[in-house]
Image (cartoon, rainbow, N blue to C red; front, top):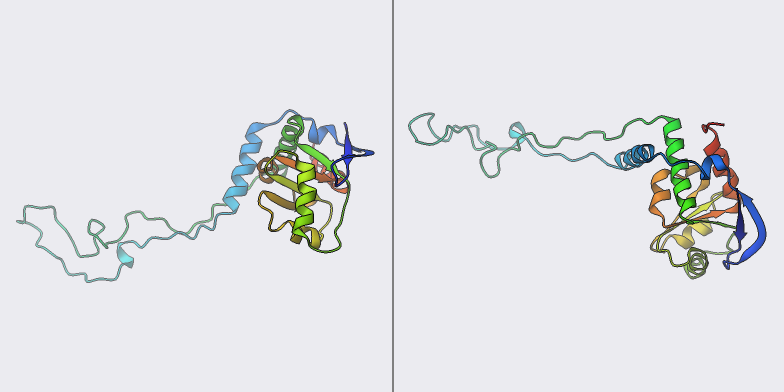
Length: 213
């Protein structure tokens, strides 16, 4: 399929970009999307949560009351989980939340997310552009001209340009990512995808690597 390429003013440039049907025109697989988003969020978790258990609490081991005859439940030392300041029962421990996901599943999820955005009319292909110096004001003008009335925008660039990344760093609701690093979570998070013309070829190649012919 083909789509018009716009310039940074938001008007048609007269050129068209080729979007591969195997990437932007498939039937979305919702379960693969769920797994890919779940893995992305799980991999971001530090897993450093920790609560002290009874054996790790500082305190005397003296038995506070006799075993029988008090009329209350038997109780041990001051580190008992039943007392204020005591240890935590089955408290959280450091752990690794990451899990493995097959490459074909991740590729299908990414293509499904792109197909959802294309069906919603949320993909715009913009000509490759660069900036002479970092300018938040200029980047805001470009993004506003391209994203229309949508709130969050994901700008996908073909190669790393520090000036472009710095210019968008302080813009709320705007994220810049390399085409080779595009993932399902960020695709879905953005209300509109702004694909540089040069990034389209990279996404097509990336998406068709594991796609069925």
